[in-house]
Image (cartoon, rainbow, N blue to C red):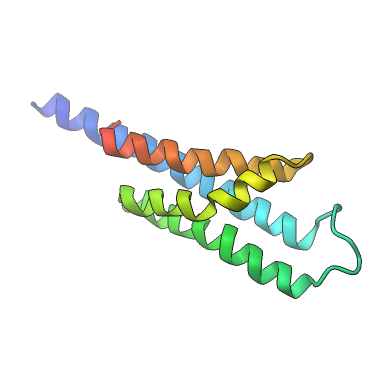
Length: 118
């Protein structure tokens, strides 16, 4: 019995670490996307891009980090669904920002691992 409880806690840590790692990578990518983007045009409205990308990429990453820290699976699913449209779009682009697709998929994998107790 104790071994099953210990195994379940270990699994929750793995899913939490995956979620936290994905959220951390998303935050770093978001910072690069907004403040060091070599693909941005000089005439782009930086303030609008900052707000839109913050709303669709940064906030879901922060939600995923909090959900992973407290081992709550449903906010992880919400972060995945929230970031999915722009992550799919960015996944189809050449360059480093295609990694947003992987971080979004990692939110889903962490959710599934948390739900299954792994």
